Image (cartoon, rainbow, N blue to C red; front, side, top):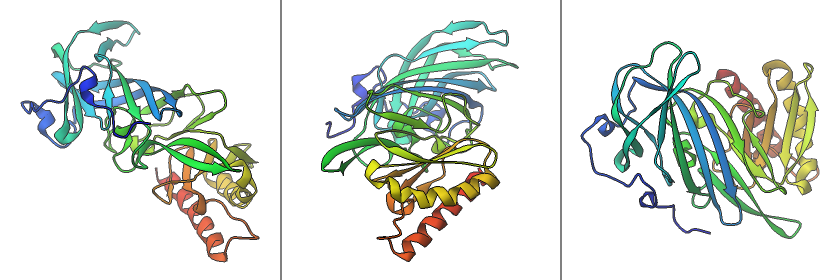
Length: 317
């Protein structure tokens, strides 16, 4: 396993001290806005690394020669690619001159050969970035956890992106007002499963910190709401019985609040108590699993509160 994040110098976008453009500002510009992300990931849970590709559709409200977005502890592995899509579905390649990382604000800056005109109705630019990252380090971004199940060492890879750690998982416009839809796909070993915010289809518009995915060897307890919407609680197979309480309580919330499939997953090592991601809510194990024969009454109350709190957050988003 790597002991430090990959160096951006390994790719074409080496770090630069160039502060001649608006990327010297801490906040992203208001005239560039993402519309949709196509994100593909290929995690390697043997080497604790991953590769990926993200295609980001962006609208530009005034001419610019540069596009910049956030990146941290991953690096762009090939020269970025850019094209224009018109309202009739046609596309035109746009030449890219250079790229570099501006580390003071955790940006990767992409420079086009010529100035990019503002997009009109139905038009978007598509910025494609290939990247590589690591699953080691802290429990933020896309990370792996080692746990023991029935005496066997196993791994799970999952995400925690709040408040500004989506940029550690993939290049993105990592500010909460830069909402966009997402399509996420994951290539993984056959003995693993994968989860994301939605089934393999376009998500609702959401902020980057709510994007979530996991690669796991868990099993699930399932309930169905009065509207026929499935709810699944994922946990280690040996702990599946302790997911029954959460499933029984959460289905009441699902009857009232949700109109889409909802998964919940108990992660062995999770930095926050719970995270209210669209369609896939992540929890620390002690905040989701309850064993009436072994857990305390305070743990029962904690699980109940977390279920209700994440349900309320989901409505507010």
